[in-house]
Image (cartoon, rainbow, N blue to C red; front, side, top):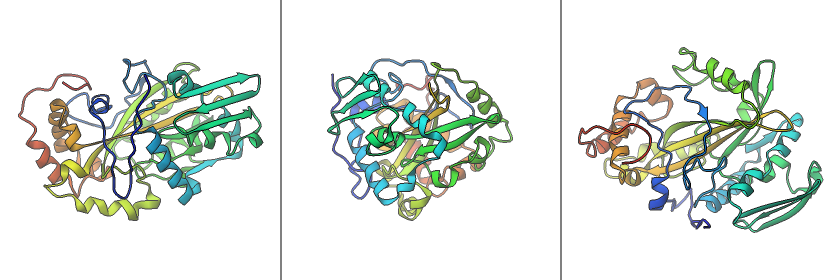
Length: 343
């Protein structure tokens, strides 16, 4: 059964919203009533049918609108997509097998040797090109497919016992910059994260990632909060979204404040041996989250008890009291069941 794609916006009038079905498949990131930064990387086991974990790349009702928003970001700032010269093969590695496998009603890939045909029905694309020949594509290979894929993509080169961010398409990030981080190693681009370095989290994470094998993908969840359903919360555009934090009041928390969850995946690319690091962003406003009582109770406890260093790092400090007060009215003190799922 095909997906019904929504007509919506992630800027200006902010018409984005989740259908009831999409609310229930939202990747709620807290398995208990407290949070502390952790490695939390696990094998990418296929999830239930219809869940965000059913396929390695998730396509959902927001697909067309997100691709339209990505095109707007790139038109304003082409440096959101960059690939160092030695990463071209990795870009070809990234092409569209996963979308065609997971969603054959929307995407078709046919191959005759190096002659490939790609059909993207939601976006009205039907292209034939020669694999490995960049002149046969309208963009470089990484840019071509990531203009048609939800979420951000970083491609990491592995060398000298480290991972290097040497290519990426990044238009939906939570306050970090590809243009600043391009060419950095794993420890350099994670340097701003508080508490995690002292706990040795990134040393363990790097060891795990550099040992990822072909055909054995991994994943983790990360989260923050966003005011308004804005995908592009980049440092380059802080002047557009930063002031939104001052607009939260006790009366508009439910509509304005959004939980922003990143499903971060990792898998080894077959030809280049690089690691692709997709960062898929999911948004849910508090009014929508409140339809799942367990999530509302748990989020109240997480935000209320979050260490100040993490609250500041995630940019919650200014509106945290209003958010905690709003969530407290949904917390009757009862126990929450283990795990991520709703009641």
